[in-house]
Image 1 (cartoon, rainbow, N blue to C red):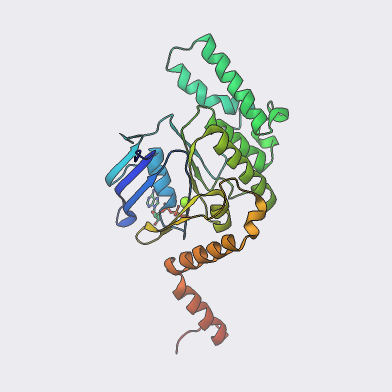
Image 2 (cartoon, helix red, strand yellow):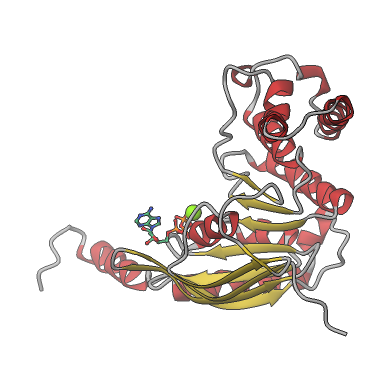
Length: 280
Ligand SMILES: Nc1ncnc2c1ncn2[C@@H]1O[C@H](COP(=O)(O)OP(=O)(O)OP(=O)(O)O)[C@@H](O)[C@H]1O
Ligand SMILES: [Mg+2]
């Protein structure tokens, strides 16, 4: 018996003027999947994610979440950006509660609603290890802490789909490892469907059960890899031969599709010539 996917992308095109940011993208994402998107700069990763978030209009094609067309942002889909985008004038706790407040203001707000929201905010603070900084302002926190606040805020409305665009790109390597295990924990706990964009192939393979490699000019899906690791990830799995073999394969494919070869040739010529004058 086949069940319908959580997200279905069919024949998706996105143009920005003459730029083809997405060319005929087709992708099914199952419920509770963890899918990572990698590919050379400009291949349309952010555009695909923003279109799924409903922040960007499509030029053509079909986008479904639970079988319903995606026509704009929705509480069922939350986005986390690379730059923490917290409100600097609100405390950690207020930042986390903020999206929820926006939502309940437009609806009838009951005491039970407010209590449930407070309970969830507290639980998220604990999960993210932020309880001790609940009353601090974002400027008083490290980058890793700020990003944990941003994730907690995204989780506040219990989104079924979490869309993350290079959320750990600005963090140092050690903090990133901690964040990786945290987000895997969140994925297990909340049973959410996660689509995660990254430049970092190791991060893509460690987090994703499926890695979607995109290629630029025009932006398109090139290859979809299944990651041959147990679902329950552990840091030392990065040392496994199968992990490193796939990492090499994905890196080589990104290089081959990036259109950067000519630049390397130019660089080689430059070093041989010993000067910037390339006239023969
Ligand atoms: N708002 C916009 N207006 C015009 N062109 C855009 C816009 N957003 C994206 N593009 C173009 O669409 C293409 C895909 O961009 P996108 O930001 O999705 O790439 P990306 O894969 O996320 O790149 P990076 O890895 O550098 O973040 C690029 O050629 C980019 O210049
Ligand atoms: Mg991007």
